[in-house]
Image 1: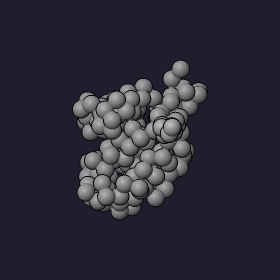
Image 2: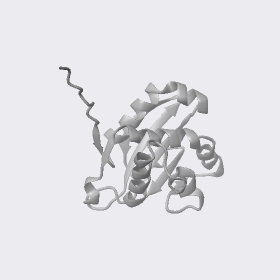
Image 3: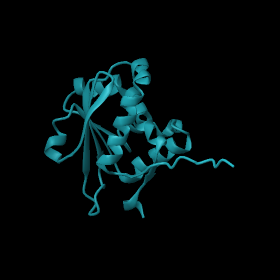
Image 4: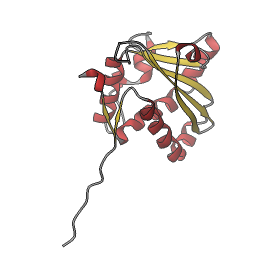
Length: 162
């Protein structure tokens, strides 16, 4: 008699640097998909405006080169300003998008994409120092969406949302 063993899915907390590190690993493993989308050369700060236990912002900087995520770290507000651009939203907005990605098996509902959520500047805000840096976001949007869509490969828990 052979036993069928189901593979245990990893569970990661959001917002946390380990969550973004997992996305980076998955992006780097799936290089072929990134090559289809084109290179991505930028640094992005993902900000959860109320991401700490005391409702203060948390900033996660991800640096991309060519077809890979090469660095992931949590940064302070001053370091966040040094990124090419940032995406900022409340925990509730990030959670709804992440849950939509999970429910769609790696594809969010159309009203839960980075592009849709940031289009009018709310509920997700694009933060950039000038129009050229804003343009980087639009140039690399699909690669960034694929980066976040990789969260469907693991379970996400929201300990602050309890």
